[in-house]
Image (cartoon, rainbow, N blue to C red; front, side):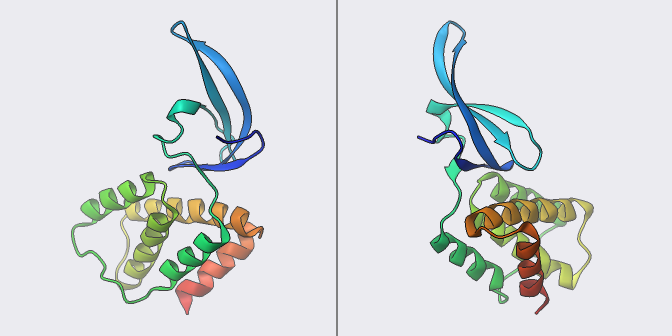
Length: 160
């Protein structure tokens, strides 16, 4: 159970804050909802508390997971999928939708490495931006650093 004021991650939308926990009558039955505000877009989402786990709502990563994320990002000797760009695009989107920070880090790393070999398609560039934004927002909150500092760190990882 999350508390009001807690930062959580909602898959493919990113980090949000639980602003309220509200009872609401839906189709004649009373249900409890988390009232979530996504930080990046200011979008407000109602998530039934009893569905929170099934939709992948989770806490922001801890320090130990931060280390694992950076380890994934620093891997350079990885097998990049050589299938068609649209198949890769679909696979990367599926990984992002899981909400797993490690999957998102893998997508960003793979696309960055691929970008060094050839030009990315428009769709791949969009997926890369999405992965980067999700990662930067969560890492900045998990590490209590500015997003600019996280972006600079990512730039250093990928250019050295």
